[in-house]
Amino acid sequence: MLLVLEDEAAHAAEKPRAIAELIEKRAAFVDEVRRRGVLRDTGQLRLSREGKRVRRTGGRLEIDDGPFTEDGKALGAYYVIETNGLDEAARLATECPALAVDEVDVRPVMKGRVVGGKNDKRGKLFACAVLGNAATEDAWVTVMDRIDADTHNCFPPDSFLGGVRLEPPKSGRRVVTRGERRATFDGPFLESKEVIGGLFILRMASMHDAVRWAGETPFMVHGTLEIRELWRT
View (tube, rainbow, N blue to C red):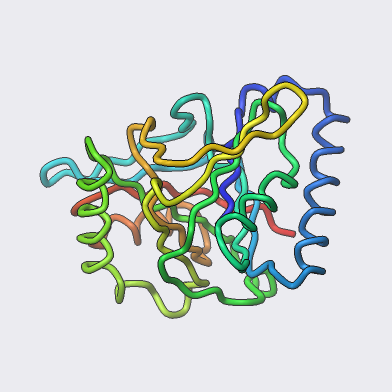
């Protein structure tokens, strides 16, 4: 999975023409990776200020409003691709259109299911990022294992449109811009307070319905769900 981490403040400061050009380049990138036969799923997320984070503290459900920009970055888009390995995926990430201040994380997929045609049905689509908070990567993996064990069969069958669990950050790469070139660095990347361990898609009538469903699930026992609506294409 390629995770595009956007500097939302920098995007807001860009001229409309520059953002329009970025959107066109991303559409062309999607067409190209689809032509190569490696694209399995993709989505563009609405701004994090429109999102919600749902967690439990003690016995109390907490719902936080966005924006969510740890280290100045927020998840702006994702691409699920199937390649011959991490090196090939990282090379493809260097082609991913982004502003110079953005970054692209390349994370191997541990497991998951991609459901085709998610844009074909009516209803809003919500990307739910599974977040875990831990002092070390080993502890973070333990949190993700607990969440996985407790939630693998809790998805609503009529609303679930696929998702993936990601390998730990140390197994990934990060693509950043350095001057006139794109540079690639090895993981781990645990700078953020809460690190994404997976992403799944739900079709719901509203953000309210998505948050209400999340609050009743075991996701809240060990971690946090960040819920963001997808742009419809």
